[in-house]
Length: 79
Image (tube, rainbow, N blue to C red; front, side):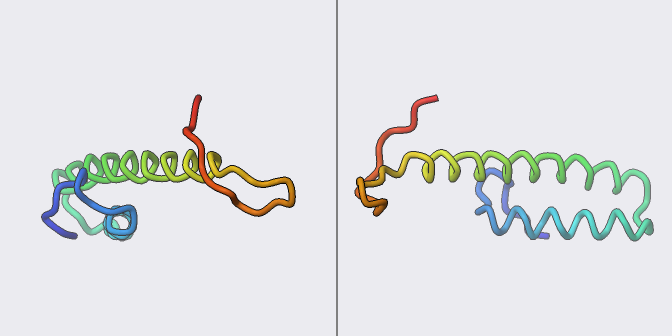
């Protein structure tokens, strides 16, 4: 895992770090205190990944299509 703050990680970096944490926790050979720290970090990484995915989904949903179905631009996403 990297020392980069979770908030500065790209989606791909956060996902890789989360997968690493899950693998380490599933092995079961991590001491309890370290497991708790890993779990807390994993929760932050999960949140970061969810936020990035939601932002990407909003961008995709905001793509306007022309009458023939081809993309013609984007519009602001409004919830």
